[in-house]
Image 1: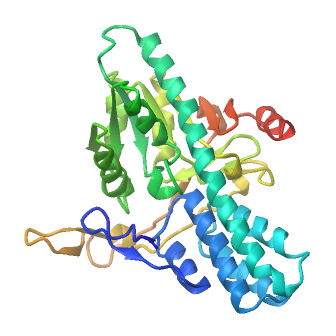
Image 2: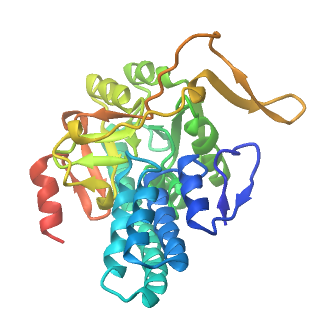
Length: 344
């Protein structure tokens, strides 16, 4: 069971994922989203498929069907490959159980990974507060884009994890939450998560971040990522690139919360990353709650206007202050990424 994220923040509806088809649909329809969670659900989807047919042909077909559900986030391919590599040497009768176990290990490792990323980011933010000086009781102002919290992972989240850890030790922090058009994951999901945890936050229009940075009202930017190329280029929710440009222009640190599983060493740079284009209806219509408490979709563009809806954009490595991985904080460079994997 998991929350249907398309129904948040106004309805908390659980959905049961009990087959390859239900896992694939949940990923494609964005009932589950966030690179780590997509990977975990994909792993369980492959395990469900192997319960039905554990032959080599079925494994290849199920792998391909699940992989096609979301092309940009590399965690899906990574998790599917882990399960496939684990079961392929085994006889068909042992594959389902092995796949189920491997999916569980992926989930357990995600929890530890996110906790470590949160610890590294929390340390960076505390250092930022000390360097800033002034009133130690004044909250750090951090801007984030999209949702990279616990809803996007198994637990804690990546970009949101330091806020929960800082709250535990009494370090004041305030989060500027980009709305994240067109699906409004910031306004709908990040704001909901932070509110549930009691973390002070303010939702802003996507285009307001640059002004806040110009005015000195942002101490740091933290975003998640769906894929990082071997040279440090970052693919993340569309709008991330503009935040990175504004942060660079105003000397604001721009951190990318980056599980090592999200680094695609086969992608030489951003040019190798496929950008998913989604249905234009996500852009032409918005969902909201009506005065009577019901939810509805309304059209916001004229009839006949075309809508182009790229789900992600690409941020050059030169605009990234640091990649914050579970293994430590590294510069977004080819050499640092290669060394990260050489050490493990």
